[in-house]
Image (cartoon, rainbow, N blue to C red):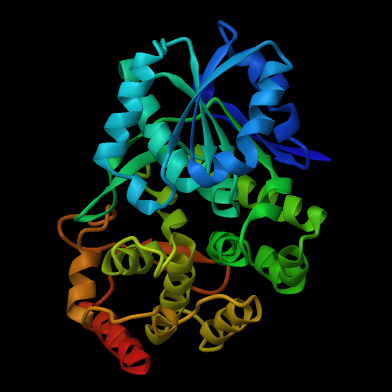
Length: 371
């Protein structure tokens, strides 16, 4: 079974194909995009060992040659040195504007390769082949590309839409439980930001999805991608509604920066904790029911996820220091952070009208419990 989600952006429109066995037919799907039978693949060490041969075999079956560049795994790869290395390698391969670059990997590879494609010869096409749940439901869709800075996450980048996204849920079976659940943090986000029926579906089907049910995984990825497509279509460059997709990220990105973009806290784990904090803040501000934070935390705990600051190993900075990191967020306007809060599950909204002392109190309370 293959589901298709169309992202209708005029001459930048593309399809997201979601299903089982898609990687084995990737060459067939990519071939119509090519001006010449050759692609450049950029991936990382772990993914290369698992999925590169399968991708290359599917390309060879269609008469398509491929060159490969393999980067180290991990968030630290989303940086200037590896971006420079990747762009120079693509130039050495004589990649032209009419060619296609393939990003095979999770969010780190997708973001970095997309940015490289955006700036190479002022823009070449690229195809996303996401291999993590997080990348399949979020980072591979919508055209946000970029790298991190010591000042904050994703502060350097460009909007550059892919030409095609191939999401094979079979590859999710190679993920560790921790990596899978980190991606599930983004899935939960979609249930919280604009569709309470999806959150209810996750409360019922989340354990089945976690256990490996193919149909449940296809449904969750498709639902998430359709929601993201709808928002991106309304607001491609994040002038308004698209900021909703950052639910949980204002807190989450600050926590990632505080933990040095290390394995102490994966991106999706930061998003999950950030979502719990955003709903808690909403309740404290009287915007949503007092039961909502406990309901969200209960589902995250049932799935075996990190939920609170106390779930992050090691010491964390002070509440003031975390506030300073939040002030570097991309959504800051005139020095004031914008928060994505909720009037109830499935009813998120963007606001700058959040008293600083309320956020500080929340963080101090959470850090106190963590200590």
